[in-house]
Length: 251
Image (tube, rainbow, N blue to C red; front, side, top):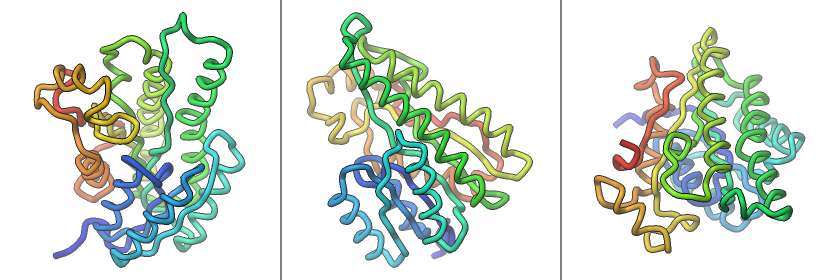
């Protein structure tokens, strides 16, 4: 049985844990050679690389701070070199969340908000800009967004939502920019997904489940399969799209 990404190469930012790690695994299962980036989780990144290698693909982990433009762009160059000079699929998965209502944002927390914007928005811009040199005509760019970009269902997420709304608009704009080269740019917008950042048995889980028609959290595998679809030839005429994978939470 043929694999959807056989012979392709991919870079997944923030691929050491959670959704990013599962995206890397799914791309590898479909035949792609994969480079992941990480900031601090070196042990987890090495474990993911070992898993990917066991699947029969080439894999590498590169340390990079997404808030540092030099490190972010250098990571792309290292990935391209390892992958033979070409990145067929770029997945911008690295991101952080800072929660708190606007009246609670004291100076210390505002610095965290700055880092979040630098990671979620600037880091995505720098990585994508750098990758355009290595993306072939017909390449794929997939950004991991969030349903909060469209629907804020609880207090304390405005700034995070703003960062993810920026991701949506970047994808739409880049779809115009890169369309002449046949490069597609799309967003996968997860809802509540069971990760260490938002566990399905955590303090906010009951509210999220109650608002989800399917009555459960999503899995990292479900998000990864959506990303892999957009990275494949099956999605060759889809660009500038926002693919919501949230069990119906945002309807």
